[in-house]
Length: 251
Image 1 (cartoon, rainbow, N blue to C red):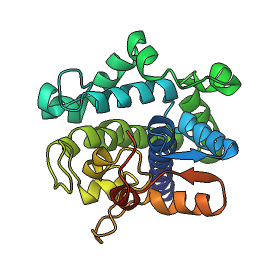
Image 2: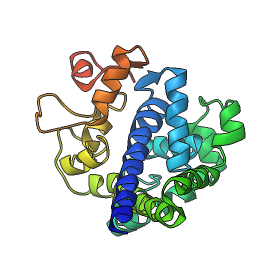
Image 3: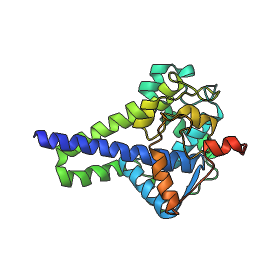
């Protein structure tokens, strides 16, 4: 039983990191900010992993996040702790997200450039089906009970701990390299594939790399993955923060 428990917990952590990396690389850096362009096959793999581990709808996530950047910590921000209160965002971020994601006017305004393909229309748009497929597949490997435990631990950690920490903690605590209302928290960055370097991201939204080289202690775990994809010609990144500082960023 102890072995099965450990296996279940290890799998939940693996699923969590798969969700985290697909969120930051595909959803955040590629789809939302165009910080990099992924090869279609690589993009599909990220989308499939995202669907199975989170069930997130790309168009909805992109719309909510773009609105966050349009009204950062001002009236209109979907999940600002300065407006809604820290604990409301840190513990209930998912509810703020759902409220905005279901607003058709938000989707129409902020995702006009996104086009749904066959996979999006027939498969990936059905968010509940993704995690269900994942749980069924996992159940055949480790059993239903342990699969449900792994899914529960993964879901709670992703939805109620890591994801809201970017919108809650990283707009409340931490340090700043640049003048904006977001902050950097190194530990959160390590746990979220770089997302915790939120102040850097808000300063240079189209940078595919969230860390700043002159800050040796800043680690963006997703950047090595993007670097390898770039070297394999499976991704084409935009300018990093250092490159953008040398040459003014495009508006």
